Every structure is written in C-alpha cells, then in structure tokens.
Image (cartoon, rainbow, N blue to C red):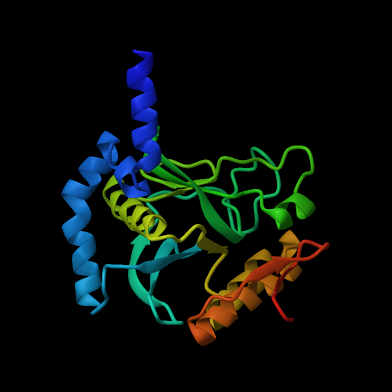
Length: 244
C-alpha cells in the first residue's frame, strides 16, 4: 500500500498540471462535454487554442464576466466570450469585512483550482490582497472568494455549472502553458458615462468614491490599450502602475 502511494505521488509530480487536473472526475467530464465548445469560441474569433494567456474582468452591476485571451507573440488581448452571473450578493462597493456579503472589488489573480468544490468547480481568488489588508478590517477581512458554479453566493462570483466547466478548462489550459498568475479585475460597474452617473447618484454616500476613482485608472488603461500593465499597491492601499 505504501509503495503504491509513493508511486502515485511520483506520477503526479511528473504529470503536467492539465494531466493532474484531468484525473478528477468533474474536470474529466468538463473536458469531454465542453472542450469542443471552447475550441469553437477560439475558431469564431479566429484565435489559436495553443499557448495563450487568460484574463478575466468582472462587473458587479452588469453581472457580467468577460473572458479575454492574449495569443503567444501578441501584446494585446481579444475578448473571447462573456458569461453572466447567475446570482449576486451584496451591493456595489468593495468587500471590507467578513460576513458583509460583498463581492470584492480590485485587482486579483487566481490562486487556487478546486476540482472537488461544493459548487461543482471553483477558481479561488487571492482575496484579501495587499490593498484589502490595508483598507479592510485588519482582524476579520473575510476570505475564500471564488468564481464557481452552482447559482448561490454570499460574496463569490457564481456562474452556471455549464459555464464554470468552460472557464475551468480555459484556466487549466492557461496554467498548463505556463501562466502562473491569471489576473482577475473586479469592478463595481463599467466606468462609462452611465456607470459614473450611477455611482455618483446612487452610491456617493457609501464613501467609496476615492477608491473607485483609483480603480477606474486600471479600467481605463486596459480599455485604451487592451494590454495589461503590472499593477502595484502602495502603503495607502492604492493601485498604481510600474513606472508611474
């Protein structure tokens, strides 16, 4: 028994990330059911399915999750597809305390693949990040924030089981191709003229205006260039770009 365990451990170490993930039944089923659909997304956009980087943008008010792809050798991202939240939690504004039911807002990355999630499949985010650790409750900021299946939430971003299968495949492929950090930017709304009016007219009283103005810089930069610059966090919890 011990020898078999050691051999299995060695095999898992040698196996690629994708091979390891596909040993889980839900991931295996996701590939069987949804890999052709994912490939068609690329085909429809005239993109190549090999060696790409993945970027996810979330908009709480619109309840939309944008999936962006950067091909090997390119600097800019292309929009691959958009998913809808199938449930929502809290209101517009960042997560600041455990139990506040808020979906976070800010610049994050995927730090956990859970192929045996209670919510079918799930992709964990690095909340609280360095900004949250400064601006949120120091003792109880909350945690365990995921993009997952099963249409329930108390602070996570849920999509249907059908769609989390697709997103999970995309994340596995990106990770398997060497993308160590898959960025996820979460915004209260699109920072368009209408979005700005929404925040000003209905949410100015929340005290988040300065935070949103800072977050808008991240949104605007990608909107303008379709490139991702490295985002840093200063001692005040503010986001800024390298070299700025």
